[in-house]
Length: 407
Image (tube, one colour):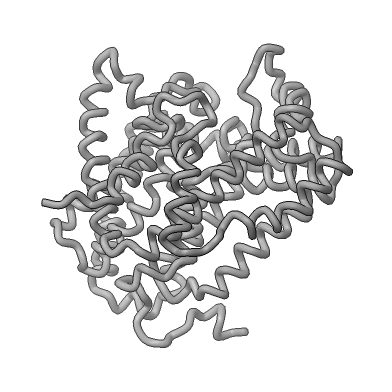
């Protein structure tokens, strides 16, 4: 049996991208020269020069007018360039691969096996290989969350989002080869074990929005109605039992802390990230930002003072892609980011495909609650949302969603 040539790279990206490397370094960055060569030979198109031409005015302004630490800036620019090359390679993969479903299936199966292994290992001294022990919220410390071989549970959950939506839609539209309950378990278990509320909430909002947009069409689907009925009959009693018998469970404690404003993780990834980015931005140039890599140079003291970190605390960052864009590239960069996202939404007609619309809605929401500007997992979702290769999930007919018909 022939081995799919894309599988080793897919596994490397999904399971091992940062395994054994210093924090911040990934194999997708180290393999950038190879990916560049592959894209050139596959598509016969130069991809790096247009990127450098677009970035040149920004780099010129930030280096010569804003002022930056040159060494840190160009190392960060090199990292951003490598991320861009990987994105081009992934887009090339989507356009050329005829076995995308096979690749996603292999990832799903291997991931589920590793989840089972992780559950077993949880009760041994080796649980640190698969689980991260982190402060979760106020009064809950050292909470164990599944991360597999990634650096952080939320990042692992975000990696899994395209797989989750793909096979969930297979169940809904009766395209699955496996039994529905087996497939459902395989896609839900990783998210539950990661306990990434940010990812789970963004997924739920995306599903709800798509259901509202295509309500008239989806309610005619028997499997959709059945799924909603099962969810209602299972989730409501479970929540009621939790409320009555386990009011102090971790989920409810964290939700209460979020509502009360006591959840440090939630605050740090949302409004505090924007507050700190604007404070850091005020040190340089509101329009053009502080420059790549400069958050750790000039923003360290701002962040440490705000959170009362010790002098030797090293992990300083803005854990929000949109807020980080604002700090690094200023209001010009933030505006460009949003214009590009919305522009591609209409240009590629994302709404004509359930899968692409779910991915777009998820990542558009999530960028305001987490991620970072060189996060390849985020860019993979954007690219999948803007690339029309998942025709099995196209919206039938010519019906347009209501928000377009009203224009």
